[in-house]
Length: 638
Image 1 (tube, rainbow, N blue to C red):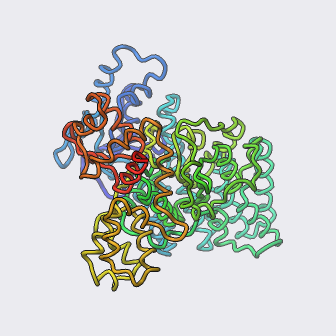
Image 2: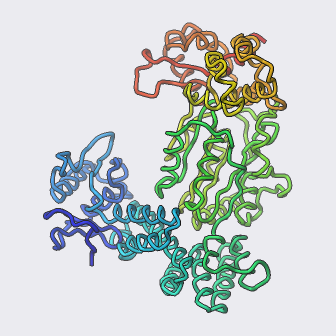
Image 3: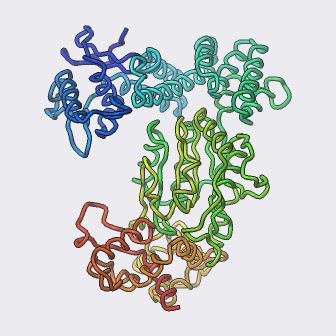
């Protein structure tokens, strides 16, 4: 039976359900949804509500192997049927199904689709839990779960495309069930969750968080022997099926229940055991990036986003943004948050096998055959962030170097772990796409944030957040945190000259601020004059062992030889306020097509920034960060 939306919809409104078989009702009466292919199209559109669905995705859902020549025309017929079912326009007068950007977009409200209502209730429940209002959280999460009628779209799962959407929806439902069960356990009401957890563990025997909740619910209900048996059964299953062991957190909970460690706290142990953290300290001077942080948090809070790339030039604060978000998302990733620095202290890239070895140690994954690299040789996540500045100019691995691949056995073990856990992985300072392809999740609820100077254009599908310079006000705010607001107010005009001479990049502003914090006698105006001198600016941006020049050198080594030559020639016109395509053609001494390819290669590498909106190549004004211009000119002249 389909449960109606929580808020009654106007008479005549169609209410769709995906959390079970695909069904629709109008005024309490079920509606016929047509032949199977028509239902596949409708299910695919509803599974991605209010989002463009590419025609290729719809085609694969209906004809996965050999689509007929008339596939597009047939799709138009099926989409027309969906329009007729929904009504051609919504309450706001807009078309309900529109075609554009190579796909179809179905507009639908929360009161018309169970998955939207489910998501809204789940978010409200988690927010209540974060506020400490556990009773409200449990009630809202239970309301969401009451919409779950069984395996989503279980009547259409013979279509691979629909099956993938259904598995994503089911993973979302399981996560909410785990949230609800853990909340009930914390409230001391474990008995209401025991039976449901047992049933779900039988259907999803490898899902560790369900097992942990079941262990705790049994323990709190006084069924100690059964709780310990749940762990023993799981340990044997993992070893037999996957060659893995339970996570260190779950093993710790088991020991606590045995009484060989800290005393178990049944009411909260589920959440406690499920969480693991291997993050460097949150950046204390994080400033600005409010919109970017809001966007990153929203993306990582969505179950649909698995990979986010944070890109930008050297010193733009990519790592700080990723770590800030990771620290704010504790409860969103019950199986842990982990940070791994992809480069060594000297700036050279580690191998993917080394990185996977460290991920395995942090997450409790046994990596068969692994990388052949002993655990002691990997840089620890906690220490890696402190080494960001010591980068000799000749030590980085060139962009075209070949790195050893991850063995198939190690990759399979890692993918199995990702498919069973909801964790957040931050891979910091990635050199290129090839490095991380084998480390990204192919399925499951885990998310990965990649920081990189380049845009990693060869990765898809991913969401990208590009960082540029800070706004003047944000850069001044960062400087004030380091030198004190009183000192900044003594000469605000000079302070503005300082941050602009730093290109308003967080790294350079931070180094300049640290230098001024030590040189308390140095007037801001004098330091602004020094930074304004192109021949001296990089010499002035050194604080202890942190050197902006050395960080620029690392980024320079990542560029191909052709890109380094081109950037050196473009540095002059770029420093004078940016350059146009005509300026690039003149500086490079080449024709239009070659200039476009060169500029776009530098954009992809993160060395050149382009306008945010759409504009023709001839009308665009391209820019290079000021300090990178200075470094490129040094190399060109040297």
